[in-house]
Amino acid sequence: MNKTFIKAKRALFLSFFMMLIVSCETAIQAPYVISHLECSIVDEDDLFTFAGVLFAFTNTSSKTIISMEIHFNVFDSKTKKSPFIANNHIVSILNQNIEPTEAASICISLDEYMHYAPEQAYSIDQFYITKIAYEDGSSWSDDFGVFALSKM
Image 1: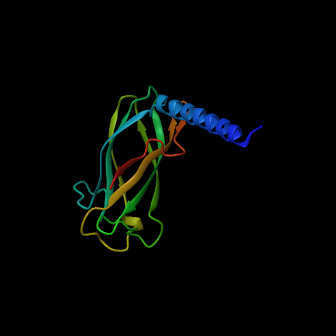
Image 2: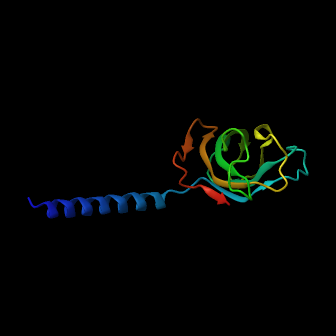
Image 3: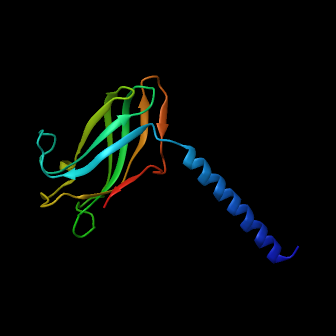
C-alpha cells in the first residue's frame, strides 16, 4: 500500500477515536457542584491562622458522602510561583458526611505548608475532587482532573 494512504488512514482513525473520547467525557457529570472557591488570608471562623482555601460544596448525587480527596496547586498571586519551600501541590482528605442535595462550607487550612504569612491571598489552580467515598461503599473518581477549576 501507498505510504500516503496509510498515513491518511491512521489520521482518520485517530480523529474518530478522539471524537469518541471527547463525546464520552462530555456525557459524564460530576456528582457535586462547587461554588465560591477562594483562598483567604482572613479567617473569621478560626479555621486557619494564616491562609485557607474555602469553597461551597453541594452533593448532587443520591448518596451520602462520607469522605473526599481534594487536589489543587497553590501559587503566589504576584510571582505565579510556588509560595512554599516544599511542593505546591496540595492533597487534602476530608472526612465529613454530606447528605444528598446538602450544601457544605468547606475550609482547607494551608498553615502547615507555610513558612511566612502572605500579604495577599494565594492563587489556586487545578482544584478538583479526585475521589468521593459514599456511605453505601461505592465511590466516584476523577483521576485526570476532568472537572478541575482554576482561580489564577
